[in-house]
Amino acid sequence: MSMSHPQQHPRRIHTNIGFTIIEVLVTIGILVIIAVGVSTIFSSVSETVNKGKRISEINRYAAQFERIMRDDFQNMTRDGFLVIVHQNAEGANFDRDVQLSPGDISGLNNKGRPRRVDEIMFFSQGQFESSRRAIATDMVARSSEAAIYYGHGQKRVPDLVDPSPGNPNNLFFNPIVTDTNYEPDARLGLAPSGIVNPNQYARDWSLLRHVTLLAQPQSAGQALPDDVYGVTRIGTDRQWLEDSQRQIALQPAGRSIFNSLSQTGFAGALPATANYDLPKWYRQYQPAGGPMPFGFVDPVLRSSGLLDIVTEDLASIQATLYGVSFSDSPLDYWTRNNLNQNPASMSSSYDRFALDFWDPLTSPSPANANNLSLPVNGGSSPHFDNVRDWMIDAMPSLWDVNFDPPVQLSRVRYEDIPTRLLYDSDAFGNPSNQANQRSRIYAEADQEMLGSSVFIPQCTEFVIEWSFGFIDASITDPTDLRYKKMLWYGLDRWIDSNQNGLIEPSGNGLVAGQDQLVAEYYNKRPAVPAIPNFDRGPDPELIVGHPAIAGGFGTPPALEISTFAYPDLNGTQWPWPKFIRVTISIADPNDLTLERTFQMVFDIPEASNN
Image (cartoon, rainbow, N blue to C red; front, side, top):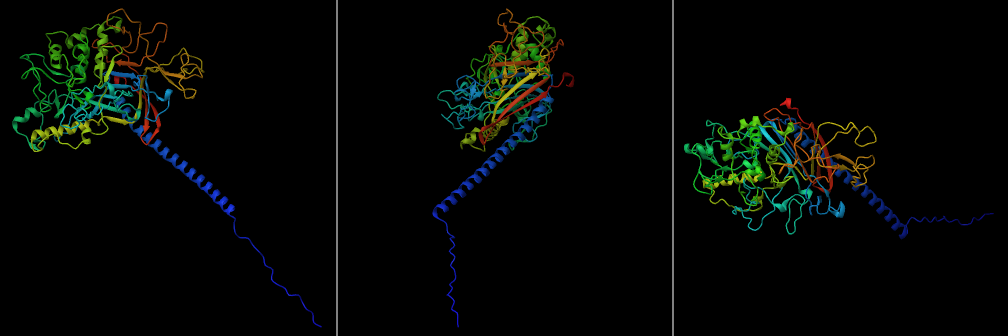
C-alpha cells in the first residue's frame, strides 16, 4: 500500500528593499541639513581661525612698533624740550565724531565716535640717518641728535585740473620743500561739501614717525665724490657740492628747528660783514627782489613731508629758545597770514635774526639769557608765554600761536604711494641734459620721501597722556575707582567701566559703578592774571595745562598742549613727567569692522642719565 504525500512547493518570501519617494526626499533633506551644518561649522571655524590670524598679525605688528617707541623714549634727552598735543579730530561737522569707514554706523546718529589725534615731539640722542635717497655715493646725512615726532599725517587733496608733472603749481603731483601743506578742507575726519577728503575716514589715517636730524655742515675739508649723477665733477663745482646751512650731503636742510626762523635772506641790502649762505646745489635760483644778495630764499618746512634735516644742534636750540623769547614771539618773524601761498610769505628771516641775536653788540643775545628773571619764582612776564609758543613753533606741524589755545594749521604731509607714479608723463625734457638729470633725481627723491615717515598705516586713534607718578592720597575708599590709581593728564577721557556700550560721565565719573575718568587736563595753574595779552598766568611749578576754573571743573577743552623744557640758564628746574602713556587703535585692512586697541606705558629718563 502506497502512501501519497501532498505536493510541496517552496515558500516565496517577499522582501521590500525599495524606498518610497517620500522616504528618499526625507533622507536627502536630512543629508542637506547635515551638510549645511557641517559647512557652517567649518566656515565658522575657518572664519574664527582667519580672524585669529589677523588679530595675531596685528599683535605682532604692535609689538614691533612698541619696541621702536620704547627705544625712542629711552634715548630721550632733557637737553631738549618736550611738547605733547592732546586733541580730537574735527569730525564731519566739527562735532568730533569720525566714522571708521563709509559703512560705519556706530555711535550717535551713525556718525562713528570721537577719535583722538594727539602729537608728541621730543629730542633724542643716538645714531640717526636721513631717510632721503643718497644723491651721490657715500654722501648720507647722519647725526647723533634728532627731534622725534609722532602724530597723524595729512594727505593732500588730489588736484586734477592739470595733473601733468609739468605743472609746477600742482603740489599734489609736484611736492616741494616750501609747501606748508595748508589745506583747510583736508583736516582729519572733516567731510567738506563737494570735496573728496582723503583724510575723512579713520581707516585711511596713518601715524607718522618723523625724525629730524640736527646736523651741522662739515668743514671746508669735506670729502666729496668724484662724480655726481654719473657725471665727472670738475673743480669749479666744488662750492656747490659742499655742505652749507641750507644743504647737508646734497640734501635740503632747514636753517632752524623753529618754523618761524626757516627763511633765509634779507629784505634789503646785505651788510658787508654778513655771510650770505646760498642754497647751493639744491633748488638754486634767483630770488625775487633783485640780484643776489637781495630778497629772500624760500623757507623749507618739515610740514612738506620732504625735509628731515635742520642745521642746528641742541646747544644752539636751547640758547635760541631762551634768548629770542625774551623779547620776540614766533609771530614777529612769521604772521601766518598767507599760508595759502606757496611759498608762504614771511616778514623776516633766519639771517636777520642771527645778526640781531648772535652779534654781541646787540641785545638780546645768548649772554642776556643769563639775566632773565623767569616767572617760575613767582614773577609774571610774557617771556614765559613766549617760551611755550616757541616750543610749539618747533613742531613739524604748523601752528598759529596768535590764539589761546593755538590753532593747528596743517600737519606733516604723506602719501600712500608716490603721486607722480599715477601718471606716465615726462616733465624733464631731454634726459641727456645734466640739469634735467638733476631735476629728475631730486623729484624722484621727493616722491619717495612722501611715504618715508609712515609708521603705522590704518592707525585710527593716537592718545598721549603723561603722569608725575603720583596718586591721590586723599582717596581711601577701596570702592572708589580712583583708589591707588596713578593720576594721568591730557584731555578728559573716560572708559566704559560698566561695559554698556555708552560713555556716561555722570557727575565726576569717578564713583564705583559709573564710567571711569582715566585722564584729566592739568588744572593746577593759578587764576588768570590781569596782564594784557597774557592769559596763562605764572605757575610756580610748570608751564603746562589750563588755569584753574572758578567753581571747579568747567567744559573740557577740545585741545590741550603740554610743554616741558630744560633748566634755564639760571638753573631753574622744570619738572618733567615720569611716565608717558600711549594708546593706539589700528584697523584691520582686510576687515573694516575689526579695530584693535593697544596701550603702552614708557618711562621718561631722569635728567642725570643724559
